[in-house]
Amino acid sequence: MGRSLEGQHALVTGGGSGIGLASARALAADGARVTLVGRNEEKLAAAAADFPADALVDVHAADVADESQVEAAVRAADGRAALTIAVANAGTGDIAPLVATDSERWRSVLATNLDGCMYTFKHAARVIGRAGGGAMCAISSIAGLRTHRFMHAYGVSKAGIDMLVRGAADELGVAGIRVNSVCPGLVDTDIAQGLFGTEDVLEDYLACMPLGRTGVVEDIAQAVRFLCGPESSWMTGVNLPVDGGHHLRRGPNYDTFSKAMFGEDITAGRFDSLE
Amino acid sequence: MSRLSNLSRSIEGSVAIVTGAASGMGAATAKLFAEQGARVAALDLNEAPLAAVVDEIGAAGKVAKGWTVDLDDGDAIKSAFAEIGTHFGGMDILVNNAGISMFAPIDSDDFEAAWQLSLSVLLTAHTRTIRAALPYLRQSANGRIVNIASTEGLGATKFGSPYTAAKTGVIGLTRSLAVELGGEGITVNCICPGPINTGMTSAIPDDAKAEFARRRVALKRYADPEEVAQATLSLALPASSFITGVALPVDGGLTIRNA
Image (cartoon, rainbow over all chains, first blue to last red):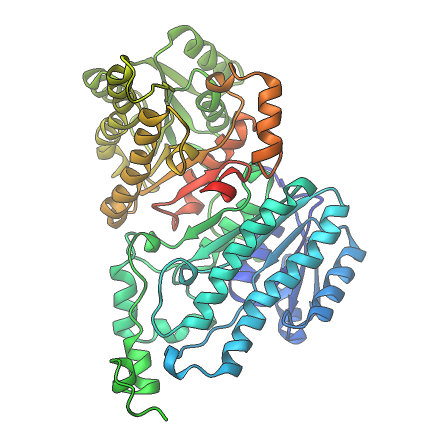
């Protein structure tokens, strides 16, 4: 295949590692210029330095939970070369039973995952629309499609992202902007190391995955690459599971985490210990 | 210098079977897959237009061979797949694309006939091609099944019950076989195309298409068949090894509004 993204410019949030970095590399592999956005400038610079010498890579430090920082990142990227692709990937997670949910941690997850996606789409759409159209893609999760007990803020944020994607697709089609999301299953990233390192949780994941293996970041990156490229020109508003088939089954069992962090009683639905 | 990507986005050298390859999305798929270096077994009921597609692929220096098959005939499917296996020495990708569109009110005299033929060609034939291809797909390093369902499998249109029931069945078949065959590394997905300019929609007047696109489709247009073929190709790539059991709308946003 040719380098079918030649002339495109992609902004990738959470671009310094994991799925974001792999997505940026997959886009660059087909000729796109990329701008990596993340909170940690050193981490971004190190990631950018590892691209091949002929790749066009820039970095911009920003926290996606802060709208003014997202707006500045989009403007800076668009100033270097017209932005045509945005990948809203930056995300974080938290585990807590509903009855023990801390409101600040709840807000923090929603701020990064859902607000961050909205800010990225909002500001990227303005410039992509002016450029005549393009593609935006969010990284959602299996947790937005299937229940994950004891992981509400994350799941709600991802379900919110999927609806934002569908609404934005419906609204922005007229501007020539396609909007889709990828819903990864369990993927080997820094954020998921707690899941990989807990044997019974990992076993439960694998039991619910028809393909019988966990994902690697490149599995997701290839789907992002497809949804951002001309090959998906008739697709918009889609929430695409890339999960080894996990969405066909049920969400994972996090009882082990809840017991370790919040105790047997709360996990089993006995709330007498709560104030 | 480090490589930017480790997964292959090439189907070069693979053997791909495409049903309904004489026209529309099937023809676009056969041509695209051949262009990408696959050896294509092209199946269709209609001999002359199938030969034209195969000749066009050959003239471009690519590889395809045609089999004239009625997918309503289980024995014909069996013998064609045996020949394909012998001819190409294997099978890697099966695209169940062939379709018919028969509208019939539930109380009409021709409902029974429409129901029988729709279920046979749109759903039962899929199980037969999959059963025939499976021994070969099991030998492949990247076994892929892509079924062409429809947005009619996600919603519904008046008088379309045979079609809608069959296409909903294709989605169920896809999900079930994804679970059944996942352990063997064979992925099973389906695509739900929305409004596409094909023979099936050619009878719809242009102004009716334009009105439909304006009111219902987020991207405000009908699609070219190749835009569906590109999505089929994406699911067939070695790089798509972690995607299975998906019902993928390729519909310009049609089902965002009424799924």
